[in-house]
Length: 188
Image (cartoon, rainbow, N blue to C red; front, side, top):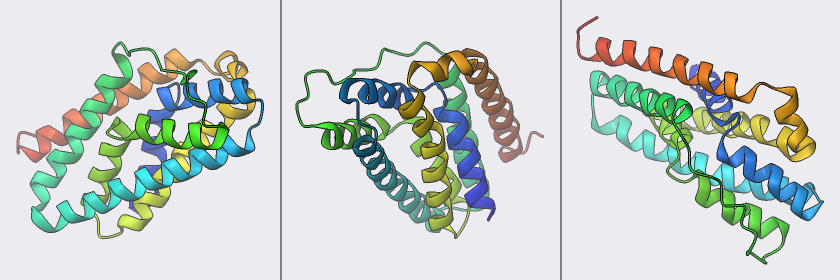
C-alpha cells in the first residue's frame, strides 16, 4: 500500500500544471470531444506506468537498499528542479491528423516517456516488491491530475494557483530528496 500511495501522491503533485495536463486541455479544446482523449491519456499513461514500474522492479533485484534510496532521492531532486525551473513550451500537435484518440495516445505517450514522473515511479517500484501497486498509484495520480484539465480546459488554471502549486511541490521534492540523499550517503 505504501508504494501505491507514494506513487499516487507524487505523480499527482508532479503533473499539476505540467506539460501532459496542458496538452490534454489543448486537445480537448481542439477536438471538442473528451472521451477519446481520456481513453488515449489512460492507455498512454498505463503503458508508461507499467514500463516504469517494471523497470524499477528489475533495478530492485540488482542493487541494495542504500543505492535504491539514493536513486529515489535523485528522482525527487530532479523532479523538484523540473517543477521550479523554466520549461520549454508544449507542442500542441496541431499538425497531427490522426484523430483525437491516436493523437492523444501517441502524443501523451511520447511526452510522458522519460519525464520526471516516470523516474519517480521507477524509483518507487525499485524500493518495493509491489511494483504493480506503484504502477496503479502512478496511473491514478496522473489521471486525477489530467482529467480535470480535459473537462475544465483553461478554467482549471483560473481555479487553481498553478504556479504556487508547482513551486511548492518542487520545493517539497527538493527538500525530501535532499534529506533522503544525505541519509543515503550517511551524512544525516
